[in-house]
Image 1 (cartoon, rainbow, N blue to C red):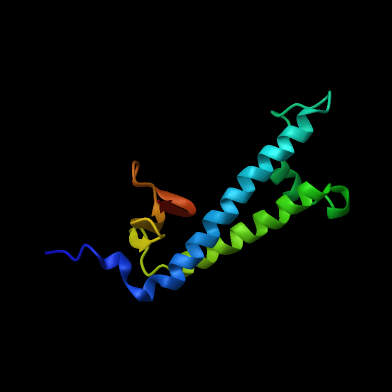
Image 2: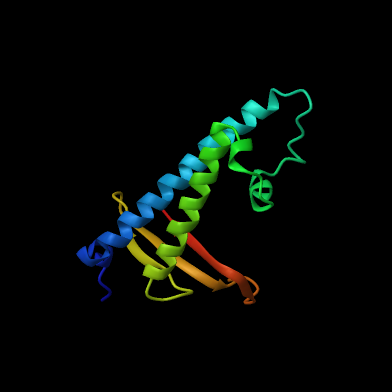
Length: 131
């Protein structure tokens, strides 16, 4: 019989803590994104279809040109990408979920290099957290 409490393994605690940090940063990014869109929508010439903060940052807009919230978003996105990389490196297997405990029963985390529907390789690993 399969061990149904495997997700309670104490050796998974560092991974669980990293996933919690990752989810918290993800939440903070969503909240800040809503704030940025709210502030920008107050401008009369704002067009959400033509504004892409992430693309602007990739093109090299200087931090001094960004307002405080946009600078905070840049920092959060950098931290988010760093945590994503760290999590991918911590996971023992690719294309497989690992059960972990995020405080409310079993959750799963894994990174995937193959699209589960088309079975085609993905351009970069995709981190998935089911909670």
